[in-house]
Image (cartoon, rainbow, N blue to C red; front, side):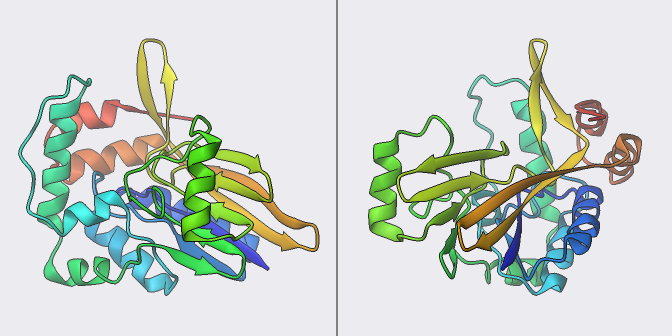
Length: 241
C-alpha cells in the first residue's frame, strides 16, 4: 500500500497544485491531508475546495480550527512580522464562506488507517509539535494512549522529520504551502511544495520525502493580486528554492 501524506497548505494554491501534480505521478493508493488548509495565503477558499475535490480524509489542524472561531485580537509576543501575519490570517478568515466552513467542520481530529495514524499536531492537541526534540517519554505516553500503529505521521511544524523509536516510526512530511528555513539572521519561505510517500512493505513502512519547486514570481503575483494586507511584505518573504 502506498499513501501520500501532505498538509500545511496555508492558502497557497500554486503550491498545492504543484504537489498534487507530482502526487498523481507517484500513483498512491490513498491520500491523506494533515490539515491547515486555508489560513494565511492568497487563495484560502480555493484550497479548501481543491482538497475537498480529492475526496480524501483530512485532519483538522490548529489553523483550520481557528477558521471556525471568531477572529482573535492581536497579541504581541515579540516575534518578527507578527502583526503582518496576524493581519493576513484575519483576511483569510474573512474570505471563507459558510460553504467552506461547513467543509472544514468535516475534518477529523485524527485519521486512522491500517497500521497508520495521521494527526496534525499530536492526537491530544492540534497545536502540539512532535519533532526531533520531543522527548521519547512524551511520544511513548501518547502512543500508549492513542494508538499502537507502527507508523505515525504529524504535521504542524513545517519541517520534514523522521524518527525511529522502539517498534514504531514518526514522520512529518513538511509543508506544501509554507516551508521555511533559517537564512542569515532571519527566516525565509521557500517556493517548494513538500510531501511524503509512505510505502507499506513486508519489512515495515518506508518513507520517501518529496520536494516540488514552482515559480516564486507567480506566487508573489498571486499575493499582490489578491489584495491581502501587507502584500508587498508577504511577497518579499518568499524566495526560490
